[in-house]
Image (cartoon, rainbow, N blue to C red; front, side):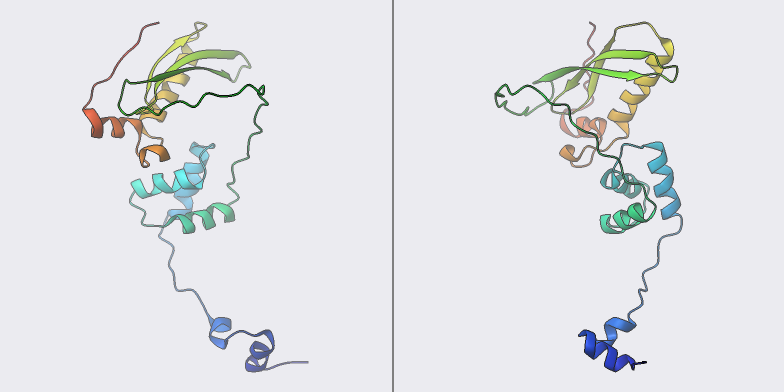
Length: 185
């Protein structure tokens, strides 16, 4: 049995203008392709960081459109499961108010394409989120190049939401000039 559009809309409870609506929004040329390319380069970035990178490249889009395209292209980042830690109580720390006020050290472990594991001790300024230095436990030149690339990416390309979507280098330039502290371990 066929219904007229007027009667079908009345039965469903919507206005006919809603049923006839066609979006007139035009997708910026190259946006979908550039989003896919950035997601392929930076696999661990979610849609919000990719949106910041697109905005830096002069794509005038809002985060909702980037999210829609991100989902349509199937670019969702797989969530990692957290390691279970012991139930020891934590002591709250005060946040750093200026550069060089507090540094954090941590070990970073990764594996190379050959399967060999590498470990690096990194030192990060808590205020600027800048990687100040790293100390190697091993002597692989290829691995050093990989981690140096990571450090350059983290300090010069990757937007940090806690820094107003600026890179640590940009944030450091806005605060107290270009003073950079190098450590030797």
